[in-house]
Length: 228
Ligand code: DCM
Ligand code: MG
Image 1: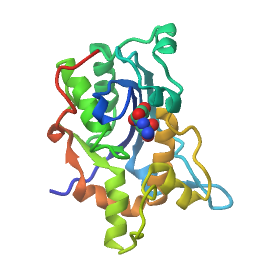
Image 2: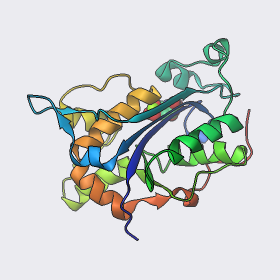
Image 3: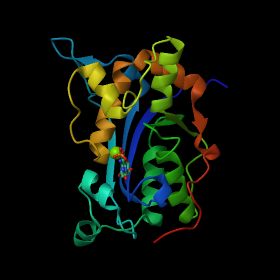
C-alpha cells in the first residue's frame, strides 16, 4: 500500500558496538522535517542546498549499562566513564516516553529514515523500547536510506562494479557534495549528513518512500531481554 508521509524523522543511533555484540544505545538523535520542506528545499544565492529552517530535534546521550567496545568508544568519542561522569540516565521508561512523545508531536503519518536502519537502528531501537514494555505508535513507518539509495541506482542501472564503501553514508555524501561530512559517528552529525543526502535526492526518495517503507510494528527486535 502506498503511504504519503507528512513528516520524515531522520534517525541515528550510536551504540556500544556492532550488531553481533548485542549492543545497547549510547546516543540517539532524531530530526523531524515536514514533507513540504523536503519538496521545496532552501538554497543560498549560489544555489547550494541548505537545511530546512523549521525542524524539530531530539538528541540524548544514554548510559548503556554495558561496556562499549574499544572501537565503538574510539569512533564515537563516548565512553562508559564519561557518560557516567555526566550522570546520563539509562534507556529507561522516561526515555521511551520522550521518543514516543517527540514522534506524536509531528504531523502524521511519520516515516523514520536511517542509513542501514533495517540492520541496526530500527531493530536496536525496538529492542530498547520493548525492554521498557513500550513501542512506537502504529502510524510510524520506517525506511532504510542505504536500501533506498542503492535501490534507486539499481533502477537507473547505475550501480558500480566495485561497491566497497560506495553506499556508506559518508561515501554517498562525498559523491553528492564533493566534501567530507562533519562529525561522523556522532548521532547528530550522522543525522545532518543523512538529511543533506535526502534533500539532494528528495524527489526520488520521496517517491521511493511511498512504496518501500515498512511499519515499525513489523520490525523484529535485535534481541529480547538482554541488558548489561
Ligand atoms: N560501530 C562499530 N564499529 C564500526 C561502525 C559502527 O562498533 N566500524 C557501532 C558503534 C556506533 C554504531 O555502530 O555507535 C552506529 O554506527 P554509526 O556511527 O556509523 O552510526
Ligand atoms: Mg552514527
